[in-house]
Image (cartoon, rainbow, N blue to C red; front, side, top):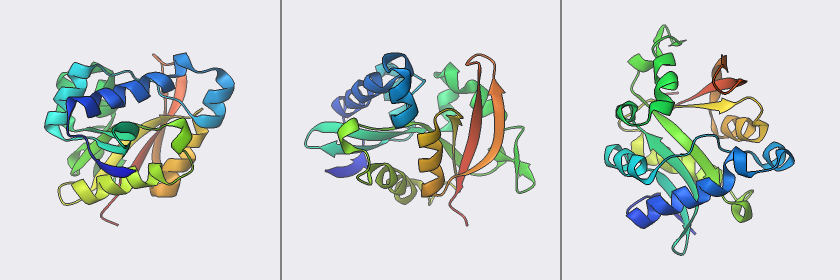
Length: 185
């Protein structure tokens, strides 16, 4: 298995295939609780445009994508309307005395590790590859996580993210946590 950045359309399609398997609407509640889940479904067109702004990090076993952490630069706002609320929030939440959006930052648009690869360090490896790839350009790595996705919250905290804000998302009808990994500390 290798961890690298997405290079081809097949890599992007591999992300989407793994995403489809782990969307909350495709998983029973007990699996969501134990293994985590995804809420946002991207299209191939969105993934291609996101890739042009900053390649996502993937784990591959042979040619198969078995994990990913999607790179979402601020420019994705133009074509991923589902992330607009998150990006707007970054203008209002303060970190070290100024809005998060005033720091050099980007967002993880989603992270997922395939069933057979969980517990093997893939999650941590994806995020450490992000840091290796992008820390010379950015200080903060940011995402939001459903509060009921406790597995994801614990995994993000283990890697180095900290909760900086909690909020209710009316469209989703649930609580979320905004987390930041500060690479400058």
